Length: 137
Image (cartoon, rainbow, N blue to C red; front, side):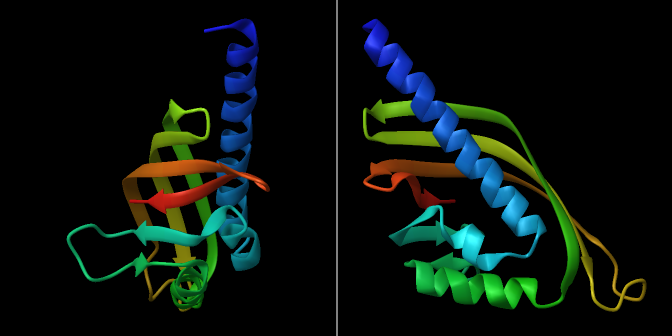
């Protein structure tokens, strides 16, 4: 790998990480528009594999899913770790990481908080708008 290739990959890795972190901040702010900005128009989303829940095949379906999911939420905190980015090609990367999220809902304390642990498996692609998320499981 040439020095130029190494520098390009480092810059690409930083851009993907920055977009992933921006997504988490937007989720905590309940800002669906900012969350949607990192996805390709024809993204494939599956938040609950082996279930009919939490699936979207484009950003409009994803926007509707986020609207429903966020409606009862008062506040949240998303944390990702163990981030592993691997480049399949110069224009495609996979990202695996772990998530911990906390949410407080309307009706608290009668409605209890939610704690989630998950593993994200994602595919990112280089577009004319920069790196975008096209698949999330």
